[in-house]
Amino acid sequence: MMFDTIIKLTNNIIVLIFIVYIIWILYIGICSVLVAQIKKRKGIPFHTSETNPVNYSLLRRFINRYIGSCPRVMVYYTSRIPSHNIRKFIYRNILQLKLGRNSIIYYGCEFRDPWNISIMAGSIIGDQCIIDGRTGVTIGKNVNLSTGVWIWSLQHDYKSPLFGLSSKAGVTIEDYAWIGPRTIILPGVTIGEGAVVAAGAVVSKDVPPYSLVGGIPAKKIGERTINLKYDLGDSEYVPYL
Image (cartoon, rainbow, N blue to C red; front, side):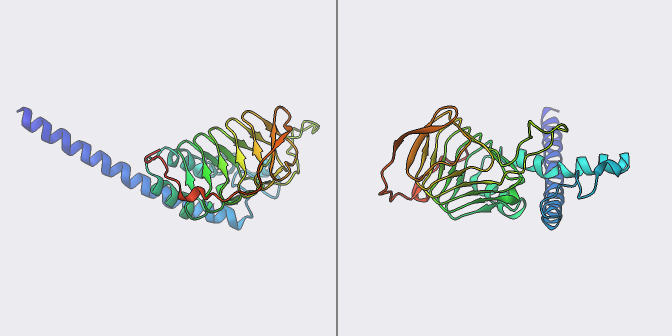
């Protein structure tokens, strides 16, 4: 009797896993199509429009909002898959994030509009980072983003009577830059080649190459050697995470 119960339970688990697998495959397909359509719309999500979305019917706004959230949900669940290779495959091929050779993305990262984000060869994105690609983020070669770095390429305009968005450009982080943990980088900023941003800094202005900045707001507190030769792509990463 117990053996039969175990067999039935095992069969039910296998069926459940198969159903979840099919749903996941379908969801990946839907997200792939959505991302392709968003790129055709030049990055405009489905819940907004060149025209006033208020003119849309309530049903259309409801459908657009929930369909448009699919890529964001895909990013959330992908970031928790315990495999670097699977995550990279989804980031590159489904979410259209431009990811260079030997780059590493650790678990729990959040990418907003990943199709507008470029990460070059040998760069490391630490766990729990948030990279907002709405107006574009470019990360150069051998860049190290430590745990919990937040990069914002768009924000609300505090002077706007309608709480509108600012029109600043995206963010660029040049080769060999090192961004410390819990750093916040605001829209329109360029981090120069080889620059270091100390932990917990808030960067609101461009950082000159090979300089060390820290504080709130970030200010120059030192300099870094110019003769940098390391290749982060050759370093060993932590499996599963």
